[in-house]
Image 1 (cartoon, rainbow, N blue to C red):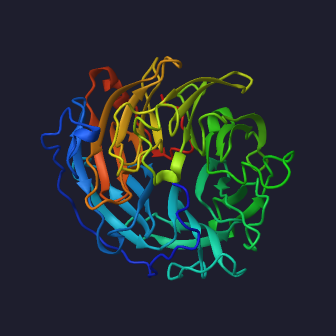
Image 2 (cartoon, rainbow, N blue to C red):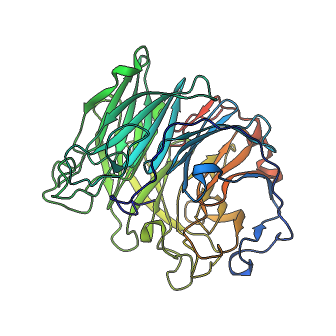
Length: 454
């Protein structure tokens, strides 16, 4: 989601650890109902998606936005504007909360690597502690960047190190190495009154985290991705980057552009392709490769995540996905757009957001969040004719509010969704044509660092 307000206040607090369990959610009688058929908060779904569980936000996380997800073994790490939550998902029908770490600072997007959790802070804070308070970005001493936690004991995470980055860290992307992790930090919205976020800002920050000494993590490069640009143009930073480490490439969604980077040297990425879409794309938000790395799905977060764009008035090509063919020499060719075919109420924020591929041989299938448009299961094997296969969503929030699913990812046989207001959802795909996807097992999944599925 785009930054609601850089100077927005977020409640302060110290690190606490809480535990607890949850019961399963019920799909009710909403099978076949969707969009404007659903009553407020009613659950609807297609017949090939089963709802297994929901874990509501609790304690200081109640009323705070749930954000992105990373996975490792039997654990899910879920960001929240108030901090992050670690869930035990060994039984997907009954996830259990292992800990809640109260460490405010939007968006708190997460990546996990071994015993380390990398957490993004993209709101100006008084300092880098978990007891910090909101502070104007016009104050030079204000802090934004990456926080590093040791999660070797998931019931008691330990704060290891903070690394400040220019313009903060809206999102982060893991590029793993043999002896070090490299964290690509995406940020944007420079302003002349922000000492640590001056225009033009066409760079990313790269943090190296030595695996033997994570406390020595530091920014090792701030490459300018668009050196030929002058002034404050459309780019002004990147919103999100997705790496495909096995292919040594990455796709970036950089405000007004979609890019491909060669990351053979992870500390010195090189932009090798750049495309724009001035007709239909307003805000290049994120990117996802297909399994073979021969296609890229870019998303347009029209309205910044807070607007109702899933309706007849906006149409099927804005606030949508754009599917590109990616050639062997890393050139992009546009194929088509995909947007959920289910219209939503004008009170519901709905636009393309975070998702991941479902590992099915011979097909390109993806699950994806659309905020209050819910979770869409869709097929883009035919790049010119993508189609929806299934869906899950809730009716409009009552009272009206920004909400819906922020991220939806397929991991080890299940779909896990972080809902802004409702908490943590677990879904299961029952489509017989996707059954073999559940045989693919991963030890770790950071959706912005795509694995090779086998």
